[in-house]
Length: 386
Image (tube, rainbow, N blue to C red; front, side, top):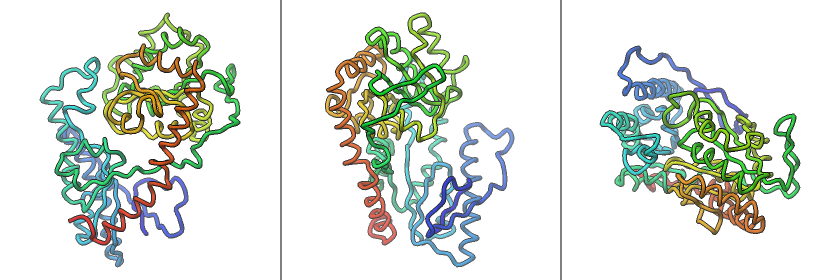
């Protein structure tokens, strides 16, 4: 088995896997049309990957199956190098101009102009090529699959990557955590966690921050811990007047106690899990977009979750059964739901236990890996596909 990639390996590969790196041999064209920039970036990566694949072919290597994440373009020309090798692609998301993420938040997104729609079509340009060349595809959730045009959905299986539920599990005797030199969080404290890779509206940072004054009124001793980088964005537009965190904190200035709101920045994974295991309630909000692993990880630790009643979350959480759901745009409703779980620890424990069951039964490695391997066998054998 051979792996191809640009970046150095972050951890050792199994002995049966030989990992080979390739390098880009050009950069983006100066003054290229901005709508073509992303497409050109993907073509540059695709060319470099195909060159590396061709070298392997000249050495006699012919793959039985190619598995690729096409999101950065690398897989675009692999079937030109190995035209008979089946190609299984991991499809994350197809951008739509209506009904998904791009027109969800009227306050911050506004009206989509024809320029916005044209730019979106260009973001999907490489996906059309990928879908055309792929033998079969896989998406992590039904919601993500639903973003693709109907005629392509017929060739997309739904299998999640899988959560290591043995590692990401409840801790019945969690240890206290030092958030900073002045604060130690202890088991039993009313701790609320909120996680973004970067604090941004796509993941509901504005709704969460706006909920803080009411949450502190309802639960005066609540400790709010916000994990993630506070500069830049991973998804969506950057803030036009500084950083999103500062913009929304300014809105609530004078109406909340900042001494009980703690920004940790990004955490190493071990510390992140320890925080989830200590948390009394986890909040997860998102536009109709790719579901974050952090939601499933919080559920896997047995933490009670309050989520947004948006399609990707509703696929995993059923209101009142394994978590609580609230309107994405109603901060006071969010505060009330969180406060309810902080006051009613018996209900929170029950919802957390059911959340854990949901992940173990549907999203654990034990459930997902055999299905992934079975799909790979079907594609490699020609049983499904072209």
